[in-house]
Length: 222
Image 1 (cartoon, rainbow, N blue to C red):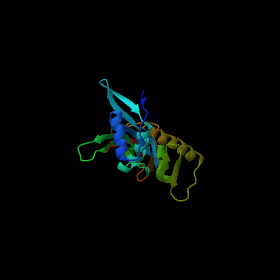
Image 2 (tube, one colour; image 1 turned 90 degrees about the vertical axis):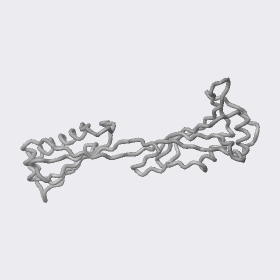
Image 3 (cartoon, rainbow, N blue to C red; image 1 turned 180 degrees about the vertical axis):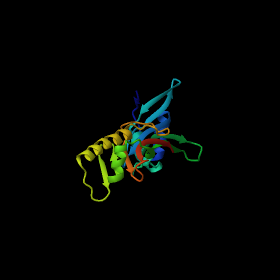
Image 4 (cartoon, rainbow, N blue to C red; image 1 turned 60 degrees about the vertical axis):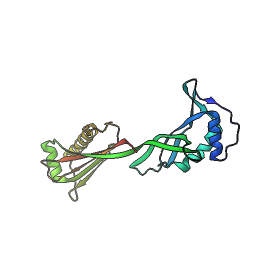
């Protein structure tokens, strides 16, 4: 639990902050943060000092207010999302640099960026003779997604009889279940709840592939 320490001075400049930093015996400040969705999300400031040989976290509202403004001048945060880049999370470490003629604060950010990556697999389908005949005579393309929607592109004007409607319904279910349960994603952590879509292009009804695309959230160190 952080210890609350009363501040004795009004902090208006970096030198004021340095004076208070030294008075409180602070050794470093950690700022865990997350941002994305075009917003700076959660962040906090943890002021660290050593007491009785142990690292202790204290609170200073004035230093908090100073760094809450100053850190955004010194550090670049990437909160804008574009559908592929989702945001970042990490920690900014703030330390006092007294090696120069005039002491100043150093800011060092370490973070992981989150991306929404798409991966597509091309997999041969095992079809019945009835399904092959239906596709060869009626269909050029089928599209579907994880919500159970599917869309058929037919060979021109197409009228289906009752038997063909039944074949189409069973084939749609078969394709959805195959795409839903396919789990060979080359090291990406698979979750059946991830967003996916699938496409079947009917070029040769004797050997047809289903193209399955899934989106995965991955983190990359920056």
